[in-house]
Length: 272
Ligand code: NAI
Ligand code: 15L
Image (cartoon, rainbow, N blue to C red; front, side, top):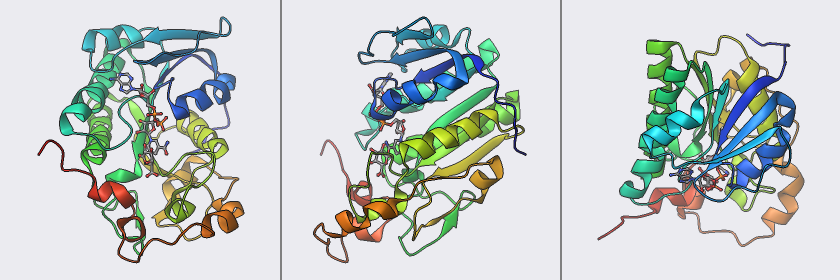
């Protein structure tokens, strides 16, 4: 199921380009495209050369997203609200946004999407449970629900229109794990790029859901579907163990120690 042909795409679209991961991917994905179209609702730093295009776009605007997708060969959908917020805030950017992306992909003949899903799709599993990508979802937030909906959207657009997607349930992609929970969920930027590379090039993925984590110890996710794509992580949170274990230990009943989704499980309610 893996591919060895990594010829660059002519044009890749990266949504969320002004965000934490977008800034990293803008650089690390250059080998995989002749041109990267960088898009966000927020300011994106100007194009550095003719291999970059910058397009401001609000994902909740269907017509704008349709124009954004015209002429691209694959989409890395990383834009949207990335933490727990009110349902109304999540609705436009994430729920309508992911529909607009797939609908534009259909209209413009794009055949491959990499969707930045999240561990918060399964956040209500406990930290002593081991699950895989086929385990029933247990979203921990409106945010997690929006990612779950995005995964369903990916399945539908494959079954109905043959658009292939790899949904990456990213754990915690930051320069370093920031707490004990992230010792299990951490994804280095290098491994994120390696996983995206496989998500772009592996043939016959249909809609495949994988976990975005490095080669950490004490993990909660069986990631054999990522292995099947050819993903071989090279980093581990273990190199930060001493630093992280020097931090204060939360109490045993703190959600950050109980649930895979940590604090997202107790965010809200909003607007009461
Ligand atoms: P981020 O919040 O730094 O970046 C998200 C970007 O989306 C922001 O630049 C924001 O301006 C943009 N955005 C928000 N609403 C928008 C709208 N209506 N239209 C267009 N753009 C909009 O988040 P980060 O950390 O870079 O994450 C990127 C993606 O990966 C997100 O989809 C997030 O949910 C997902 N993810 C990230 C994880 C992490 O550990 N960094 C973990 C799990 C998932
Ligand atoms: C996510 O989905 C968020 O986008 C990110 O900011 C982190 O909170 C991450 O999950 C996590 O669970 O650590």
